[in-house]
Length: 86
Image 1 (cartoon, one colour):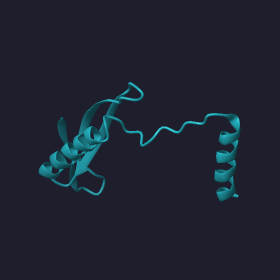
Image 2 (cartoon, helix red, strand yellow):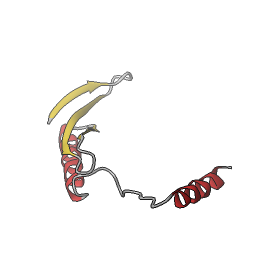
Image 3 (cartoon, one colour):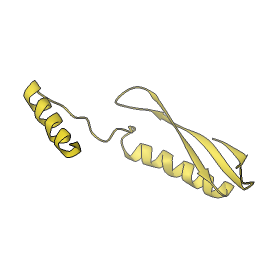
Image 4 (cartoon, helix red, strand yellow):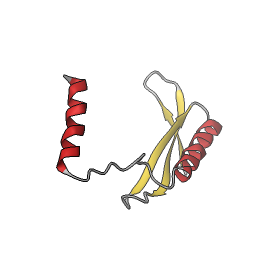
């Protein structure tokens, strides 16, 4: 984890860390995130929390996989979501 000191446009200082979380167990893609905070210590804490959350979720960022067994269930699901928009 590499923590960098960043100056914002208004002149305030903040810290940013790019954190490699690991490989997503569902997709097989590499997962990275960014942690930002006002102090270096808080930035380290946020980065460690992101890593722990990733591990607790089963090494995946996806919540749940939606499976449609046939076209009718897919169409009904799309229609239910469309009704909320229109």
